[in-house]
Length: 432
Ligand code: EPU
Image (cartoon, rainbow, N blue to C red; front, side, top):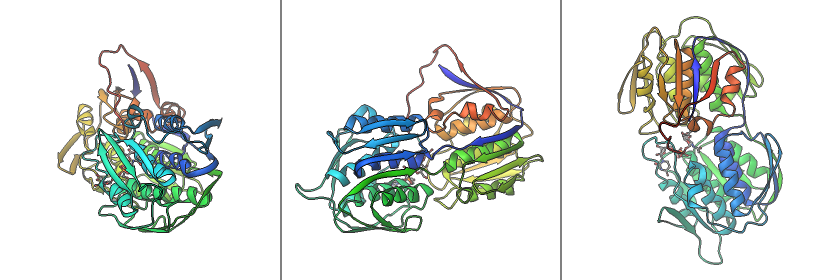
């Protein structure tokens, strides 16, 4: 079994280059299904979720050609299959975007119910509500989402008011609506940077989408999307994770290839905690020399503090002076990492969606588990700041969303490596 071994105590110094955004890539790659022609997609992160979604597209009949490390050409002109294989689709949360893309292009899709990090209930009722408003009929049978429109028709524009701000439902409805007949309006839409990125990708291929980044998105269906070249935005959460790593371990690092505006919510909290964050054109310089202050955090849809940074900032707050309170405002159960931090000496009480963290003088290295993607990142951050050696198992979760994490951290002075240990316990191939 592969693990990360982290010897804590080294401050970080140097620069870290941020990769393309995972949650944009896993929607934009399926969006290529809507396009008649070759899409050249640049700044693709090399992570296992992207490998999986590209594999699914290939199994559907797409031609995928690697141009270089971060660029692929995808040609979906000759799709032969509209049914996603169960074993592949259920491994990844983002497989739900294949419903919108296949329905939009062909009016018919069969996609496995998505997997996902265990963050509590992860219903898809808002996605289904959106497709229904566009004339789609969606059933779940035998673990598959079966979606279709009446024979000989295509999706029709509709009015959708989301009962809950959902990133996935907003993007899925955009995918279904891009080629639909007439205008679709999404109200109470999510506003995350990757929603704007998907709209920009589709518009650059000929779609007519307005208002992405606000809570009302209007999609005027067009007859055809043509090929083109598009570059994915930098990953807000990857950048925030390394900012949190500098906050925990100390030192000074330049986080490069970012859109600083996307990081405002994270930078503001770090500054409150006593960390210096200096914004540059496409980089942020993060420096921590003094003690960390306590802070209260409530996770919310963008532009609020991102839930995908909750566990990483939780790890940092374990070492802050005083008592911090975190309120999880998006998911039902995103505190599974807390037990692991306790193994390292953290003092955290959880009651429902609220975690109360009493700062401690130090954390000590321990064997810990990466319960999910962001929880795994939190273990790395805690390990960098802890005294002694931390060994993190189930790192396949981390590799789903972080490109070259070990190399990037080692290059700024972290003592982190991948080690192989005997396969005493088979890690479950959990998914998100
Ligand atoms: N929700 C519903 N019904 C729906 C859809 C969502 O009730 O039909 C609820 C969820 O249960 C949750 C809330 O709405 O309480 C928000 O869920 P959302 O749909 O926004 O989440 P998602 O699209 O499934 C994406 C990211 C997550 C990230 C969330 C929130 C991808 C593949 N996943 O999930 O990313 O936490 O948005 O920002 O884009 C991660 O990267 O670690 C990760 C988990």
